[in-house]
Image (cartoon, rainbow, N blue to C red; front, side, top):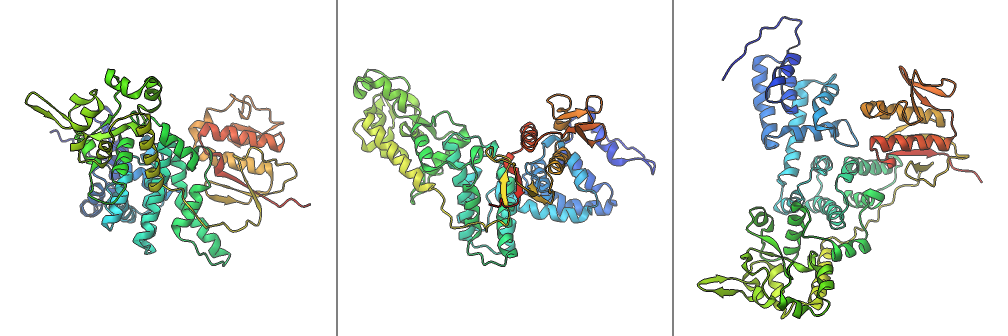
Length: 520
């Protein structure tokens, strides 16, 4: 080991030197930089105390991967609509810490790290809640972290019951499960889960401000905000969900999705618990086709003349898949052999009847495996999924708005003869009453968050112009040497914003226009 000692003058920037030391060696993680940013200005004694009492505990709570936690922490503290890029965490951290006390920040970070641990390791206050959160952990997604950290902290502060916390986790699981079965992209939910807790609190605050009694629980309001999402963010309704259960290629799903769904199917009824997730991760259990991928003469005879059609329709679907830990020697054998097992010489190859998994034992009740049995099993699995994940119900209704609202994603909305009273963006409300002023303010707010992306738009598409190219008769300066085309009707102003939001990958629903009621 080599130790390098560097003496600094009073005007040297120790943190800047530290950041550059490893530029040719092993790259520093964002957490490394943040740790030293927080501790470097303290005395040696203070460093030891803060490291031992706070930072070290933060590392333990985050399974020694504090960078992921710090990304979620920053997202929550800055109320961002999506987590910052991992490569930009330290840069954003320095901006965030301006004016913040470092010791106080460490105390707050440790508090949030405990909730992060509850989410990522399923370490909640009761066995029932731990088991429920483990279902989501099996999906191996971090898209829900920002929501759950905030919710669990809120639940603790407001003494929510175990049953209410369970309902909230179950709602999120339902949302994820239906979308996974329907093959809808999970990364599309990043913005949704960054906003959900804020949406619920805003609904609660609206009732409180109006001095109207709110008879709905947190989970009831959450269900409303999940159900109101549409487009890429929607919760699939029953018709789409059922059709996907019947037709989804479950054999080629991502492994975590398979583990999550087959564990839920296996343990859908109360009884002896089979730890499918652990078995599949250890490869003690695998997913097997009941009707094999390669059909021999016995299988073709049993399936009948339309065996090709049956195989094409059902081969990789839930109806034809099961869990097994048995030897693959029997994978292409006749159904009776796969069901009952076989002895070859001195070797005994167990069949489905010897399986510990309920999903597999149920197959042994069949004397053959044809279209009829596949349809029956398909219907059983549909019923199981609908029992596990019924369409959420809610009685919550938002209070009537004193003004009309229209979000940018409502393409049928016409701004003609509508008076603007303000707008809401990224959860904040602004009192801008002119369409041009709204356009300029929205663009500037987006520029603050997505500077690099917006910089690529100048002199390229027709809305954004540099000083060299801008026609100042029709453009308005939005930053030094940068102009926006503003001489256009209100419909075109909305087209400009849709173009900007698309380039920055911002959900159009993030911008809500507040409008004066149209008089008759």
